[in-house]
Image (cartoon, rainbow, N blue to C red; front, side, top):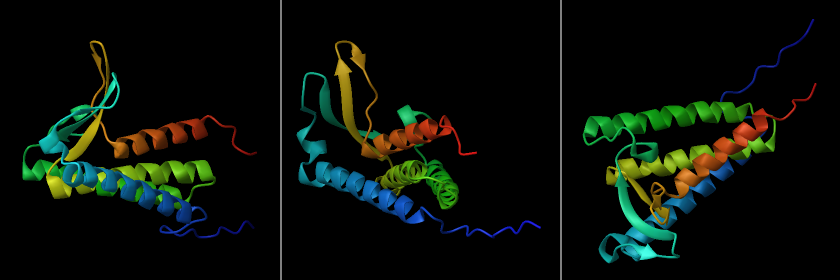
Length: 167
């Protein structure tokens, strides 16, 4: 008879890595945003051209990715924060069942980015976006480091999903 071992919903083999990456991503994201807002005073000093195709500019994003679903009411903002917390909880549980480091790091990046943007919503009423790529008439959306962490995490999960699983 096969014996099934009960798994914990809150801690697993790679949970320490998920947690460490999530905390590091969150702290770096928030530190940069705080410095840009209150140290450099980006809102007062205005955009800064770093290169001919990259600038630092302050944008308050009241929506989600690419500025979709803009929320200008307290209820809408709180719904987005709630969705963030629920999604992060599901990702954490997934992380407790991670079977390799790539999945753990990827989930940690997504969780750290989600909480970075979620804290922005709670404290500022909107997400602080500041990186803007552009070339000629092409202009990419304005984003932040939390967005980079989330995209990198999703890419990591996609890459892992195409790997052969052990037999």
